[in-house]
Image (cartoon, rainbow, N blue to C red; front, side):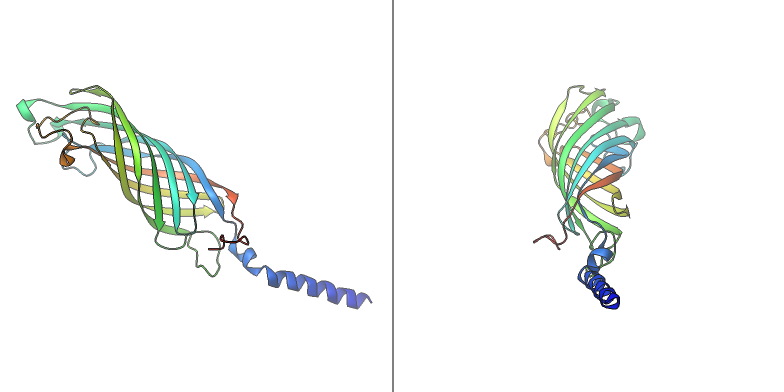
Length: 234
């Protein structure tokens, strides 16, 4: 009788292992992430018209991400950027021989879909998840700028279109590290406090300002995804 009970118990344990092998190998998956970001930002505008990384200054922010599946995610971020510059750093002569400088703050709230080049996650299963994955991103946002300038110190608000690339690394099931490089097109010419010095028209697309940034963020994952629920095992 004892041998029969032992055999039944072993068979039950074996059946459970056989039913859930994927869950044991898959590791946890989470739907949401949140965490801080820090890095550098710089301005492209009337003063800097050529340098790709001109006078980078402190940038920081808060990131929230919704992971749709292993490839797609939506990132919500709020960032603060310091933008500085001086026309003495460049050979081009400003109209009237005027010297221009600025020290501004640019704040932006945006939403960006992110597409990873391959399945991103923790653990090994039939979906061939990778802990390291590059991604592309583009979105829409709203920004405003204020601060000092030798031109115009007034605050400026604008619609923004951020586009960029990045790399994310899953350090642990609940922790991710991301490096994101963004180039943000604004629809205003006063982000750097200098408005239309060449008299081209402030609404001319080629005369509006750009913001560049490089941010390193660390995020904490929460709300575990149910892998056995319908429409979630992707």
